[in-house]
Length: 280
Image 1 (cartoon, rainbow, N blue to C red):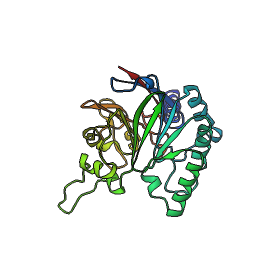
Image 2 (image 1 turned 180 degrees about the vertical axis):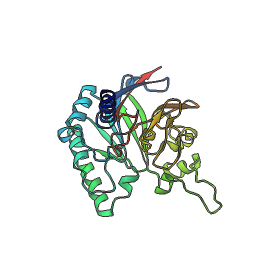
Image 3 (image 1 turned 135 degrees about the horizontal axis):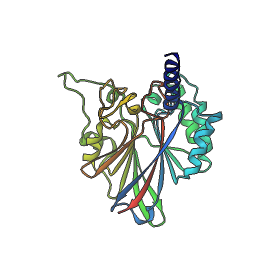
Image 4 (image 1 turned 90 degrees about the horizontal axis):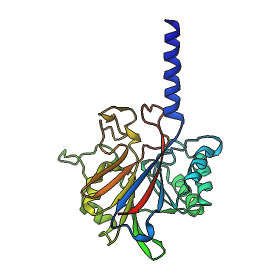
């Protein structure tokens, strides 16, 4: 009986370490006839919710894994630092190493937005000094040879990160019109959106986004068969779009389970996501 108990304890501890202190890699192949021909095979690395965590010395475990993937572009979708501390050294060890090899774009999450003003300004200045472009409710055009596609960054207000109700006690929602008021109308061409919160995927789809990258939900923390993720930071049980790839009316969203922020993961390993675009 003692050996059985010891075996169970060893297994449980090993499983806990695996699910909370190691990092996996997953590759998604996104096929679409609207992807420009020159972007066929284009590799986008998606990183989210690091929360200033560290894997190895100066995040060298992450850096080595990413260099093996050799992306064409790196996209950070928020909460790479943590609101509880102005220290962002672990994130910068990662970002600095990657910025020497790969172009990158960054959007804020709710944790960056909740930093003190001076800390936030310093963070953004340091990010831009690395050559990383911060997309703050902006649109840009990505160019490769003769082809172009759109890259948008949507930074939602803090009220969209909690269960929030208006004066009529109706739950706050985001609409296509709300996005148009922030970003303007959608431009022609294949469009990728970076935004931290996946909860409003229906609105992103209605706006006309082809592919959205998001994070925030941490995979639902604990995942169970069939049920999926249990809880999101928005205090929503069984959150939609908690981890992986989803599709709605031809629009796709890829939600990263993140790389940090909690040590209570269960069947929910931290992940690096790589997306390869393919012309259908």
